[in-house]
Image 1 (spheres, helix red, strand yellow):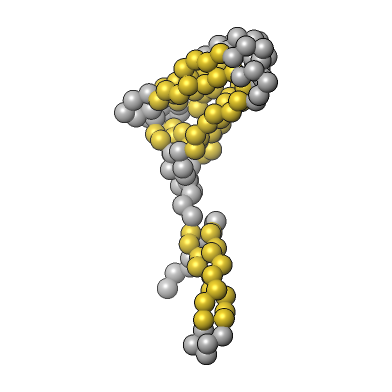
Image 2 (cartoon, rainbow, N blue to C red):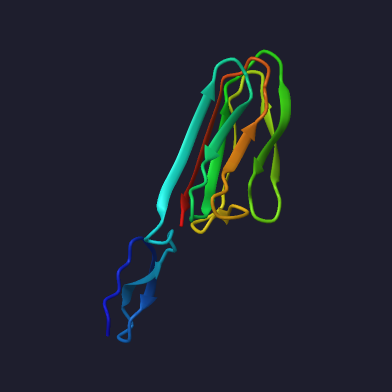
Length: 149
């Protein structure tokens, strides 16, 4: 039998009765999925204090496909609420769209985690772009992460 390597695991602590009628702890261990071991992590972060439009980019690389695993946008509170459409382009199938807002008196955050496998770009050597529209005079930060394979 070969070796089993677990890079991350989830442990559920369960009480059960052993054959003698006493309680014992039983641990159910499952391996969590992860990005392929030969992948190269990629990320980008952008910020504006003037509310200007931003684009965070997972740049394409020759001979590799870029995958997006997640993104997050944070918008600081402003004087008058505004909203606009955020888009993610360069994905296989179609682009994604989300509504993002700047709120009066409250920090706004929006994002999505696409899991360990992520969503691939439409082709090798294709960049994935997270496009955040202009939001008045808000301070806006965008982060995107993924990998290339």
